[in-house]
Image (cartoon, rainbow, N blue to C red; front, top):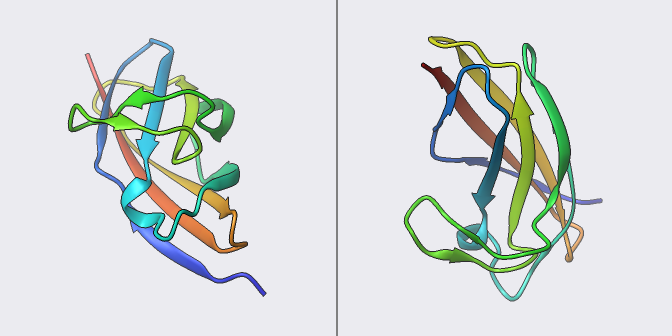
Length: 110
């Protein structure tokens, strides 16, 4: 039976009324060469979340580094309002069958 670990990602600030492409670098939680096999999103009340998955291309992480392929999760988020805080939950199944649950706080700004 797969095990689940909880991860708190750094909060992201998203512009109200815009479509935002988000990426969360999970490299620090993927030890021993593990990669992300699949991702689902839940608890996204008040938002439209689409195209949830593992990253199929590298992206720049929040610290200015590069997230390698299959080491991060990505999604397209819209419908946010300024001044509202949203909490999303992403469940990532790893190549080892473990599940990492990532809580991502998003804050709508003008």
